[in-house]
Image (cartoon, rainbow, N blue to C red; front, side, top):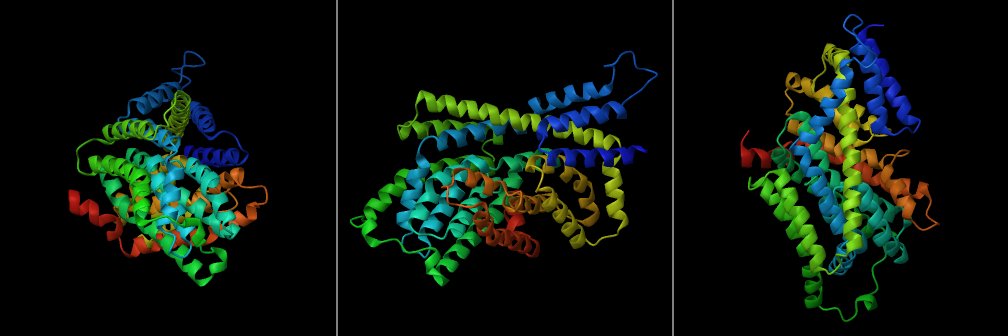
Length: 451
């Protein structure tokens, strides 16, 4: 077998192994070391069993991950999210948003989406947002006689917004992979992120207006005696502190006042201050937040080590060049290339996490972008929207499984799958709108930082 054929075999075995349920990070490392041992094998210079360059590569990749300044922001943003999650801010936020939106059709669903968007922005962890909102908002919606599938779709779709709306950890990873500025990516993601959240809300309000039985109006007696002044006070106590924290972090990054790592440090400190302000910071909650941050950061870092080792060996064997030459030989138009690339990423989203897709497969397409005249920032925005589908597409819709894990016993997985399908269609609509109107993503970065 030639080296490029070995690279294709390596990729096929990796995907098959993942489908069997093996841990992704350590599978990547094992595959990288195993095939790398073959790729770098030199019988003439070899002095011992472990005298192979693949081990040097593994050590260097591990050090590169630890020394990467951009990735320093990951554990800090994670800590901000976990401490905010445990400060009991979200339940107050959902309640106050529910009261403020009570006149709208599907008011509780609108409140859930708004809460998901804000909390997802703070934490950026899909599983945490879907699980928490599944415990908080989902039972409340079912108690209010909301259709089970409709309510399920709202929670799953809203919980996925954190990987798109800044400060998104996924965008940090894409920046490290593509060498695009994190600042420009954050500026570019604001338009698509809020467009998707807005389309979700338009759909929810429109469907509840056309079919009130799936989202009954709240009973007036439930809010009897609540004045506008009280609503404003509740919003001030729940919405504005969290919104101020997020806007401060984003503003510091977008206006060049701080690097992403420095802004993430501000966010982590702000999360602690919010927990103190709400009198919910206990020693046990602080320990739990630190433990979860360390555990998730370790998982992310090992994914980076494994992905970069795997990708380096795959590229050394000629895998990247083989795929690049194959695609370029088809002489595709730019739109056909984009459709092919996004279709591949969509299919890969079923068995793989977004991190493997960004680190292993997206670099295959990045060198081809200049040939087709595609801006890597614009391509990254399409990928970020596309990766929403990896959490929503049955049968591997992880957001649905997160919700099923905390849902009441009577809720079936097929009901959840049915509920996410309209929102999945909205994601595709958003991708179409972004392609037709690139300014949705490109206007702000170009206006603020130039072309």
